[in-house]
Length: 93
Image (cartoon, rainbow, N blue to C red; front, side):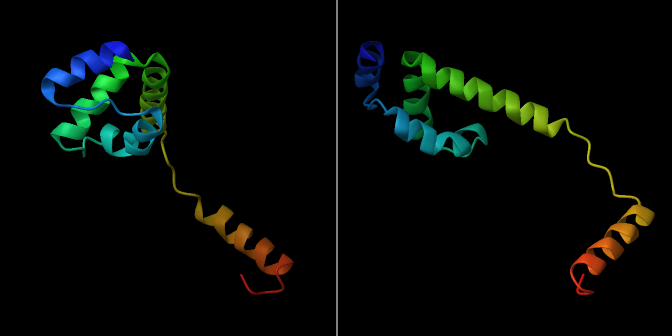
């Protein structure tokens, strides 16, 4: 944390807390943070291995989820599913 504090002061940036980092991560990973918040978050990540690991894990998760192929449910299966649900729910499905 001290390294981050020393790095941040010359640029006028304050060191973010781990809690603040977690709250900003979605926007950070989506590239939606403006310059100052992004720089201070980057600064925190340089000084905090736990948060860096968390960000790395989220990036890997995003990559894996984006690689999932979604397929349409076959019409016959969908029809049978609706029939079973309608029967079990009393005809309201």
